[in-house]
Image (spheres, rainbow, N blue to C red):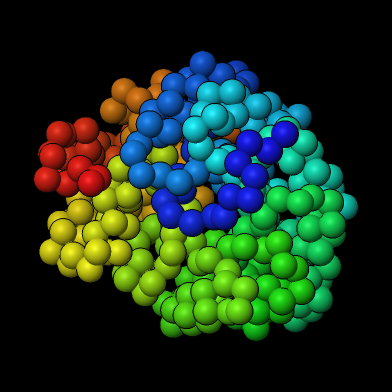
Length: 320
């Protein structure tokens, strides 16, 4: 049963990581500790599971349901839980959505199907059909995950408007358009519709710049490591406190530069390593085809931790 009925996506929403044992099985005990760690951050509005940060691509549907169950058991009485819907086919996506609602999710993050990667941007009716089938299967609010427009899976601005009009249960867009001009247009237009659609930025590598454009929230895997700093930055921007926002951003900068360096696909691999290096997770294990980071890169992460002062108590930058 949904525990936060009618919750609307907004604010600071970390996407949590998923620890594994050396044999690649889910480390439930470490995951619970991670949930307690991130979920205790004052000021976050929800948690997201079964996303890129949780290596959803490498998890079976049964494992995804177990991750959601563990999350709800650990923090579900205090925070809404957003569940990812990751599937290449619309029928399967609708089934996953139906199961997530039955299991207790409060909202769904809908990934673009890889089956649209060979020209789906030219057929916006495919996106409308995909979301309409999911919406018909669940009463939960939906977040549309908008990928980089330079790739094959991003939704152009016009398609987002069409989706918002055709599928009323789309309440937010997780915008990763990758183009500041398009991103700002999405923010201004979507949040000003007669039925507003919240823009949750996931431009974590340039978060301050994105937030000052007016996003009403953020949804980020980096929140699995620095949710407290994200809350502080979000609040500073909302308060028009530029000096404070810049000071917080100076702390964030070395870490996101390390997280989102090429190859981009290792971003959550690096986040796991940082949490392991700071004692917040056991030794980092990722599921193939992802592989362990080389020692030279782990050394760079150590330097980023030191430069950012991660783990150092600094009340002036604590979330207010």
